[in-house]
Length: 255
Image 1: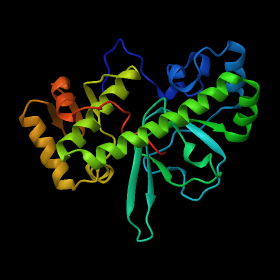
Image 2: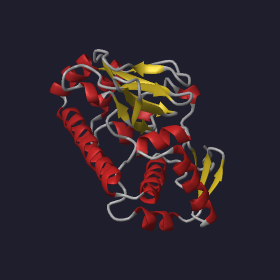
Image 3: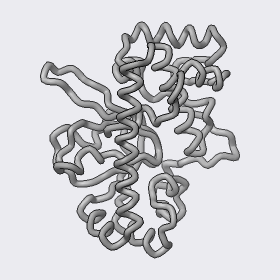
Image 4: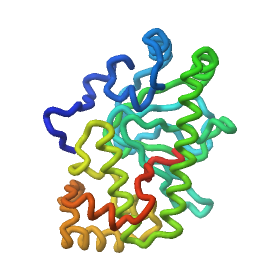
């Protein structure tokens, strides 16, 4: 992924940076929390060592111990059917929380692995729950995050059920563009950390269809593809192709 030099870049060397100085705090933390409250939250957060590609954050069936905020890199959430087939449920970028699926019954209903070198903040759930009872803004933020997950689910189901293959992929690319942009990265130049197989699995399409659509989008001047590096040449054209109701954080759900 490349970013203009005037943009904030999340550096693996800065893992010990406190919430107060973190460039992602506005995405992870409740707006309007006092400095004292942020310090209390920061006190319970653990900065884990970077994960390598393929490392698990947690596995399906594991007991809920912590939520995780992605600081750099990206992760994939997926489940495995009784027949051993993988179903990709979402991709998560810096500033997004994973592990929310286990809050209902304290058990993770999917697995989450790193797609590349990734750093996360680990938030022990018991300590977070206690703190949320004392800090109303924190409790409200948890409700807001869970509500956003439900909205993402609804958007995802709408895309899978009613969109054409072209609309599905354009929705996916526009969503990634918006999410990267909101994190201070370029919204028109970014690396796809997920494989074509993962994208196809997530969108319910064949890998051959994904490859064909990338070629078509490039030939039509919408994007430029250099292996996993994507340059969006015509963002408005992609949005038009995606159709109405595009813009939900597709790819960030159910993790």
